[in-house]
Amino acid sequence: MRSLTQAFARVRRLGGRFLALTVLATSGLLVVGCKPKVPAAPGLAIVAPGLAYTNHQIPQEPWSIHVVRIDRHDPSLTVRAVHARNVAVGLAPLSAHLREAPRAWGSPVAAVNGDFYQRDRAFAGDTRGLQVTAGELISAPNGISFWLDAAGQAHLTNVLARFELKWPDGAQTPFGLNEERRPNTAVLYTPAIGFSTRTEGGREYVLEASAEGGLPTLVLDTTFKVRVKAVHDGGNAPLSPGTWVLSLGGTFAKRAPTLTVGAQVTLSTTTSAKLRDVATGIGGGPVLVRGRRPIQIEVPDDENYQTSSMLEQHPRSAVGWNHDHLFLVTVDGRQRGSIGMTLEELSTYLIQLGCDEAMNLDGGGSATLWCHGQTRNQPCDGRERPIANSLVILRKADSGK
Image (cartoon, rainbow, N blue to C red; front, side, top):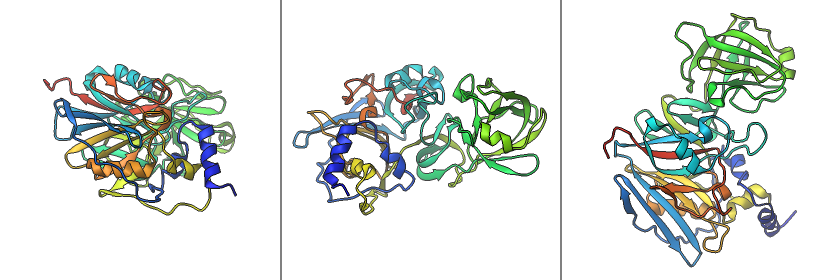
């Protein structure tokens, strides 16, 4: 068995994003060693109504930490989960997310990079977990998720999708959402993915509402009755407003029931956590803080990449909150002025910052924080990395501020 030191060295050679976090995200657990000594967080300077920022420099480590604090009681501010190019797949730098966000939402005042994501092929930018944007579900949950309900209350939940399709004969089939379809799977595509399904081969059913009025917004923990509008073989079926596409991989299509135009099926977006009325949601993980305490587990015996990446110091991003404030935090890393943090060091810092709850976000070259007109941190790639999604704070257009 390799020594832990050897494992760490291998991680340094590999570099890249923290894919290990997605493996442990469903547990919400944090690897713990000795309690780190992290200096107390400094005060923050008000840069706009309801918005404060600081760059906390700790030379002895060295660390450069960027913190945005948002007043949760300011009615002029709203939180959105934004995806690159305003679709469910694709990559773009964080600053591009802000330029492309719908103007009707308001003016961006702060943002941080979001969830882990697929980096290549046709579905580059497919996030690993939950995304709900302006109440619309565009990516299925797959572990630790941060979400805001209709009343603006924040939640941190371990949630898994249990989506099911019910065929006319009563048989049931699990399905994915706006993701890469495999030969033996079924995936539902909505217009949030773009103009077509991006698939190859298989069979696809274009779906419409069973009743007049068009398809509703796709949301969590809801049942939808739909009917087949058209049948499309060969993949890459077109998508248009008011329709969805149920796509069956070639292997699965051979044994699945055959549907004809007019046939009715039922789609259920049930989850393990029974989420309803989600206004904004984004995936990540692991959980860093619960009840103003760090989440703790014992270090696994196996010395592998998943363990070592958590114990090493890397660029990090996180979202945390308490009753009064929401915090966006990014730690620079892999550079002379800031080496980065372990997850334990980050959780300790977030508690000292005042967070009652906090969740880790994607890190490494993806770690980016924007506030009041500019990118504040120093991404380790030397420039903003194209990323899938982000958490964006906006000033409502009609706020008058």
